Image (cartoon, rainbow, N blue to C red):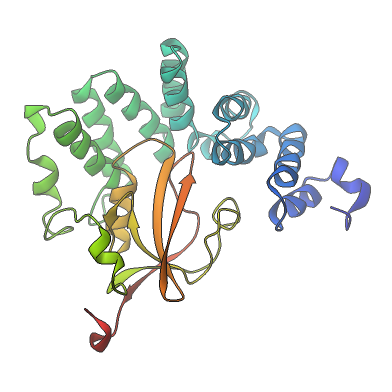
Length: 281
């Protein structure tokens, strides 16, 4: 921030730069607050940082301001699943429903997911499934998998134990997870990984500040082994809580990274890795 001097009081580009370079948690938070004060579009960035720090009520206030004042609703809509969930968890079902409806009206991927998750939390699974199907048809039609829909099937079957969805997740993911979801246990930690996802660069929001580095090899998410990007995306959709546990291999040893991501998304490239045949266990 010293580089730009007084410009950090009014120039969003100067504040953005100051907020992206390595700094302490509080310095980053201060710069993000400045950005949010200067323009509501950046309040989602502040919200993301507050979620990462476990300050969810403040994050919700930042996301709410972005919802009410931002001129571009599409980027904001991707943060609204978190906001609707927060209101539901704090006994404000009406506000949660209003946020979900507002998000869905944008028609974005994140906005529709906010509505689908609202239906799901309130036990309206048929309506939730219809919205998840809409996301698949609109955004995932050319993909091999639709991660939000598969996450819904997982929760409906294995968490809610709804007989209408019994076996749906397994049937839909038979090719994606040939042996089913595989837990990454202590036995896996006793040897180098055979497969995983290589981080192409540090994330400019939270990943760098939480300790992850370019070329780290992600081998598990929330205790489930990941071998490719499709598996990674589906596992990230199994839950909607901001807590995400990453296990990565770096310089010959495994490292645990407990993260909090408002929208459970990585904003960095992930490149598939397979160990040379001679190195595989």
